[in-house]
Image (cartoon, rainbow over all chains, first blue to last red; front, side):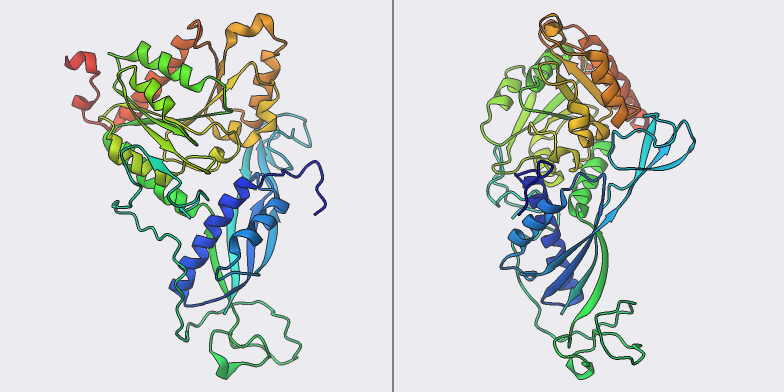
Length: 124
Length: 308
């Protein structure tokens, strides 16, 4: 893996999230009657604090030996959205501490982009 | 593995409690049971699965082998689930929140890096507020019950949760701890989370507010280094302010960073050692508790000293 300085080396947080994903997959397999999960689509907001590389690493490790062993993980990023109180309109941000791209104010209220969702699955 | 926290089952230890799940939550551990039956579940969807054929694709997959029309995709189908990854934790947290509301308990989730002085801040607050408020404490640490013992030495009831490998408390653990601890109606429950500025931000425990503690021996840029935590907190306690003459800590810059990630965060500068700023924190607790008590019957709102 190409470890750049922006990647955390200890994916504990993402591992926890993958445990949560596995539990949901197992619950859904009972409810919806499937035995194998082949592909998983996640929606991860850019402000959720999730490191995508760490998530992929954690996913493969946690799913090993489960109904989702070797499943392909797709991560659909959702942009960070905020309401600028100065401009009184929505803006797009990359990080929580970004300034408004238009007026430079930090008076932003994050309104979206912190989602962590399992969107859909391919199963059999 | 336990719910969402990722810690190994049996790793989590709650004092006087074997983590043995007699609680009413539905909670399945490590269950890899699979159903073998053929499903007939019909599920409309609009996904193209890489079918090379040019025919109109109007039927769905979940029909079993008889309807297969591509090798290797015989039973494959798409399932839309739209579930929050932290959904289970959020459900436990919602149970806790309901319990807090029913009992008029103000629950505060104290979060910080290790060594920010959370426990000292708490023991000082407890000794200063004893007689005025009923209080209880849940202590989270990976190992040892040292902190719960420090709290119990003040005379307030406390329970230790050891998360083992887990890096944060979760809603499920706190639900268990509540059963053992049984905080009094109308009390203030301090939940001292594991020292970690990353994961506890994402795991709701059902608390009314997260209180982030930052000591000035840390960098003033902590709020933007760990923006999720300071975004999630309603109050920031800037602790060890008595050390200001000896450090190059820029208080205004730190508060500015905190407001960048959270424009509505309140900030109190304090020192658990000298007591400076502590009355302001107590005032915040009193005011917040009043709001918690709005829907409580009048007899529960009385302070312990008034009942004596």
